[in-house]
Amino acid sequence: MPTHLACPDCGRTYEDRWRCECGHPLEFADRPLPDGPAPDPAAFDVRDGLWSFSEFIPVERRVSLGEGTTPLVAAEGWNAQFKLEYVFPTGSFKDRGATTTLSRAVELGVDTVVEDSSGNAGAAIATYAARSGIDAEIYVPASVKASKLRAIERTGATPVRVEGSRQDVTDACLSAVESGDGWYASHAWNPAFFAGTATFAYETALQRDWDVPDAVVTPLGHGTLFLGAYYGFRALYDAGWTDRMPRLLGAQAAGYAPIAAELHGDGDPETNDVADGIQIREPVQREAILGAIDDTDGDAIALGESAVAKELDALHRAGFYTEPTCAVAPAALRAYRERGVLDADDDVVVPLTGSGLKQ
Image (spheres, rainbow, N blue to C red):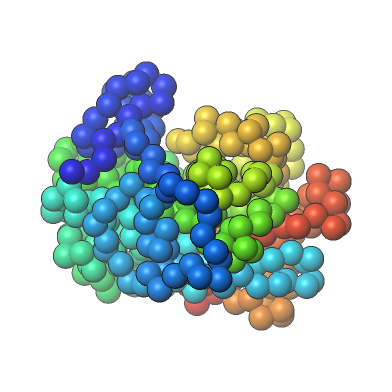
């Protein structure tokens, strides 16, 4: 029996719905936590990839391509550790959420999924839909990168190109959902997606022998990875497997930085079109993102185009072949240290979220 969903705002519960009647995003009504102390890291069996942490995941079926257990490596030029999320099957961290979301869809007997995406999430949902035998329609901006469009098309999914803004793409997709065209496999709304991105925290803690970093710096658009990290580290702490929470520090693109603006004012008028993967002006999880920042003494800042382009070059020269949006987090790490938010000797983990092969 699939786990029910609940609204944290009004308390309504549902067997399946993409958002609450009150308009609030939904969560799983029951959050599984393992019994007993943290296992010996050296003896922890990771052969099932991110599904090795199934005790934390409220989905029983598995639509899998062996995703997870991405490398955690030293990044000497940044005095940090980079988690190489770009080595997933479709080349981005979005596979974490896609595997759990399509597994949830199989549990519910879904025939067709629909999703709106600037590229990576759409490619991930389309790929895992193909793996599960479920049809997929992916709503994308008309300006979507050709490489990402091909990745969607080659799975057999149907891309629906929409002229206008990123919000216009979402609006067109929601119209299709409301018309009954398919089940909304949204990386922004669907709680199953966040159950998948939470595995980033489980893997990071395991790879560090259950030692939590002082801070985690992530790109921040809809908050898919930022909130996943928060939920994951919170679950580890609540289970007693770790003894603290890291500070969560977000990196937004200038011109598309509503969280940074909420915290610090409008800031730099520059528009950052390099970090195209996080060009989100109205994140649906805004309240949850701000709550995570408050709970972890976190922050969010906006980065201009020049800083991100410079950081991308530095990443490539250091052997990290990422797509442009990835560079926003390492650039933010430098900015946080320059501003005194982080000390030079703080222990920091930064995910590199998408492959340079997608450019």
